[in-house]
Image (cartoon, rainbow, N blue to C red; front, side):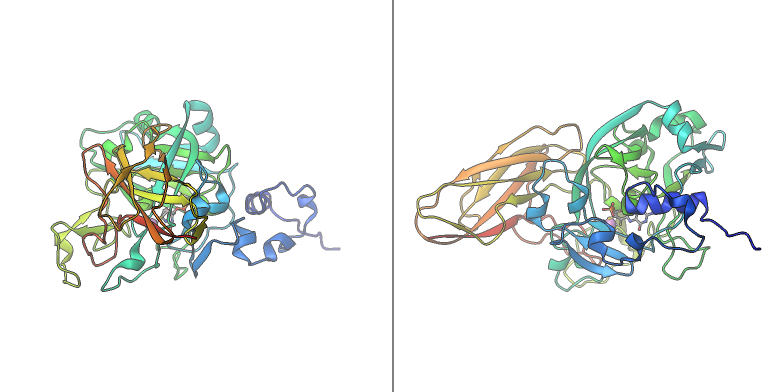
Length: 406
Ligand SMILES: Nc1nc2c(c(=O)[nH]1)N[C@H]1C(S)=C(S)[C@@H](COP(=O)(O)O)O[C@H]1N2
Ligand SMILES: [Mo]
């Protein structure tokens, strides 16, 4: 009699990662059997997202939050946007996971198991703002192709891992190092195994910052599968595309990394401002680095109704790439006059900062509450859409909510 084939250990652990719980009798499952929990293709259940999140694309999965879903100080998984350039990897096995440090500028190519990384290097935890470069794209005119993000492609979770710096230094960094580039195991939409959906990176100075982590935990637990389990690069304050998910290799480069989505117009904006709709050649496009100052009113939800005479307590978060937010203001008269909000210090560098204000309205009617952050260099958010660019990046215009007083 033919022996039955039981499901492989690596498949089992990738199922467990997806389901978010141990499959207690998983070793009894036959090879090829898919647990019921995974036969479900409902993204909200599959990724444990709030039912009010908005699916922008299902191939690849791109899911956006709404402002009021981002009210928590630290973003829970249920409200974190999902941005994928390719198809989700399968057979993610933390136990056999390795990270290789290679490239022209590594002293000694080295491979670490996830266990090595965890045991050999000190652990750090930081709250980090990760915002997609294309957040706000939906407002550009002429429109830009790509996911039409409104305001919800940003999160600030708590990430735990080891410093990328400690690992790079352990392998050894040659003097001619200028950039790092990550490589991951997600699949190109064409399913061509020789193509990577995305492979980006950052200059050495960003790679070597205290807060740049190789993370294995998010909000105190294993990183959810869709957010990069079991190992993710996190580089807060820079376009989220630098924060590679599912990474198994980092190259120390002697030139600006040239992986997919590093070149051409991807994650680049015109080096000098252009008129809306103008054609820009690739050599006139510059790589986006630190993200611009921005804020989000997370309470109340737009459309709130306030009773005559009541005070409205608004709150939200503000962030400023590599900088701190120095000042936060609100306006109820379309930016004619501004009033200060209180703004807290960040939990750590590159975390978002919480603001609040108590607003009274002069009489019944329709109002818009606008919020405006100013960074530590004195640069404020624009009231209207800033510099048009072909791919619709870096829209940091003031967020606003509608309010009726009656
Ligand atoms: N391996 C891999 N890493 C990736 C991506 C991807 O498609 N593949 N997308 C990047 C982009 S463009 C963004 S905005 C963030 C989104 O992170 P999140 O899905 O955890 O919110 O992941 C980045 N890291
Ligand atoms: Mo992104």
